[in-house]
Image (cartoon, rainbow, N blue to C red):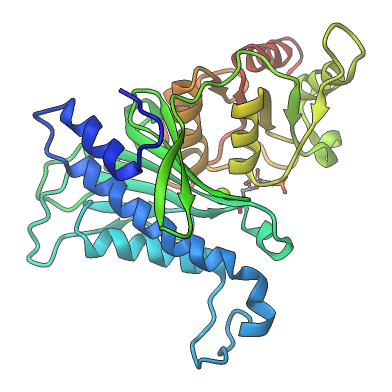
Length: 335
Ligand code: AHM
Ligand code: MG
């Protein structure tokens, strides 16, 4: 049951009570992510001071080494999860290979693996624009107590147990799903508590915003070009509004609240687009579907794609159901 003005901690406890036989492992994992997110948020908020405190690779006035924020975020999330021995493996967009966590006594009995993009849209940091963290959680498929293998990470998105994102925006929010709808929590920075501000989030069935990097227009497949023209036509409720931040979490978060479509298609330069299936598309697709929206690669449901490698990319069409269906119809007909 969703109550307003609840803290994330209360929400987790209340929802866990609905599953009396659960071990609480997933709840502890979400709590660890919430903690790391606060630490990263603190650092992201100081980003504007970087010229004063020192650049990446330099030593700041306190004699500390400066790190790039995406490297910092990666380390913080990984450290937090390793220290709490809460998962058996982690894969990150920032690391070439997955990390096996065997536990202090080599007896890791945890059943979950986490995949994440620790700081998505990080090129926006320099210009004080919102960035995000994305995470995806699966139950391992290999036996508990043995080291994780690639098989544990290369699962289709429809096997996700939970997924979420943190948006470091005008306020900081944590939005997540465990497969029973989507809830959004806003951080009160003075208290360090997350409050349920967006209970049971729903993607509007249709919308009037399209988000795509139109600078790449000449490289887009014909179906996408035709769909963009359709969005710009003066007919019915069109033309739509074009909004593209270049920070996927922010673009999709806005569209989920207002109604819209986000597209990062394949192009003549990149056959599978840019976004990573495991760290970006799958978790966002799970959240979007749980909120009543739709996510596909233009032809096929994102969550049904069987990944073949950790850093695999996929074209991404995601947002209000009717808008994604329309874009898919253009892909079907022209690409
Ligand atoms: P990143 O993981 O290197 O930050 O790249 C992902 C980001 C997305 O947040 C965003 O939608 C996209 O890259 C923007 O790419 P482009 O500048 O090509 O439009
Ligand atoms: Mg990214």
